[in-house]
Length: 232
Image (cartoon, rainbow, N blue to C red):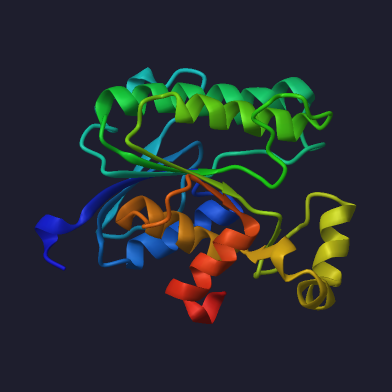
């Protein structure tokens, strides 16, 4: 692929689990020419493709307007675990930050393709009793209405961390412990973090011939098996 056909990709959430894998994959991907990582703390890495932009207040993304100009693809992985923050903070991170970033990005790069890390059970109707589902659904609705030509909503179920980490709660510690059996019994309820990240980057950069804009866990696994069999 020639440099002139390479895509400019912006990534939010590169210090998180999925975002970290997305960053690594995008930097290795010959279809990607530059990666602009919008981060709240330094990544601690350097790469010829990487432009690191420190931005701590996602409630106001207006200062990013120039940085976000000329982007072709966006991968948005910013989020928080239920129970790790207050309900008000969970909604702020999940909904408000997404909407604010999308607003500025849409004004700076109106033709960008947008991959969004949502979650299994996301409820665009807003009727779910689960706050996480309602907030992810609200963010999805906002992105679909923002005017981007392509929006891809990824709804993974349990995301397997691949590399050891400090799990956020007991449920995640339990799922990691029983993952081999859980994967065999319920293959469409799990996805590897690195595989999910690859799918999000690939779709934003290359598009897809699949008509739907929503990718449930089963769809993500099928996509990964087709493009990256080794990580499916």
